[in-house]
Length: 436
Image (cartoon, rainbow, N blue to C red):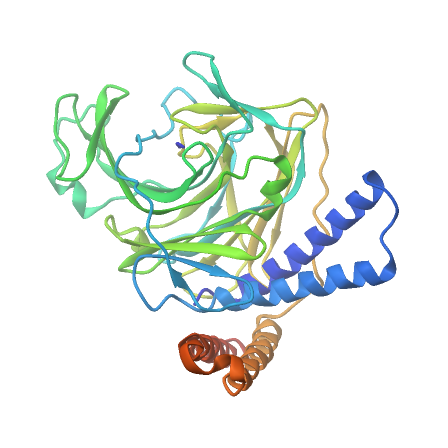
């Protein structure tokens, strides 16, 4: 493309960030001078742990207003922020019919899956390891290079039936009309936003529903709609990929996109569920790709990435995660090849799939060392303790002089958000700690 989720997601993500920061300390020590003292390492570890606690909690607190929001460590309060202007963004495209094996490299892509009657309700993608000096953004039609280290991060859903196709033109060249959604973070546009599609809506010259843009490609008309999004400073260094987590969560009325763009900031935007994704989301694809319509991220030699997909099903059970090795749905590509074995899965404390993409000859992959067995009940219990500690601190802060006068409103909001986190944690513990 172009330029109160479950605590079991958040706990491991927090530990993942902590491990990544540890790795970053080691790399810096090897390349930039003397080894840090034990005291400095301890301070960095404490800071990483504190940030991880905040990340666990903020995922359990939904904004109290509808629209676009930001939250910054250590606050649990979502701040209203202006939504970006997305109406003028050029539409991107789904995978062309002839690009059978390009997404994720020459070996296709990995899709996290669910099976009806259970659907995906929350999905996030991130990078466990980034080994590259960079890449170029290449127009696959003209061959022109448009930027160094420009890219898009994308979450792409499966195609599905939607009531909005009721007005589709029956002679559409490619058959049945279907809905499709993507969350996009474009460094060229500096925006993260939701893009909805009606694929195969009609033939060239046919019109789209009001407010939708007609896109005439592949001898058909598709209809695109740019939803709410938020401006994000471009993160164009390879190292910055390690800090990015892109997420989409859905319910029957709202599609919420999330982007952790640093370890200590997250943005969120609410969109109406125009297509009915919540009842039809069966697979999800995540990756880094070229930044404009049908562009390619052409990686430098000796590059590799390890990606992680985390997701939750509508039945809220932690079962063996499932995936497909198949072509995805996005039209953008990268030049890496999927290392097809092993594809690593983990079911506790959440459904997780990890895999490697590389352009290194005969590159291998070993499943990452993950935390030891952790039950959902154990995670929920730890989350209750953390949330209660945060609430106690917020309530104590309300009694301090710094929370008097005009500052009292902010302190009250912090305490209310902390109380919401406690309530969510207690409810989840009651569910996950039931006797078997």
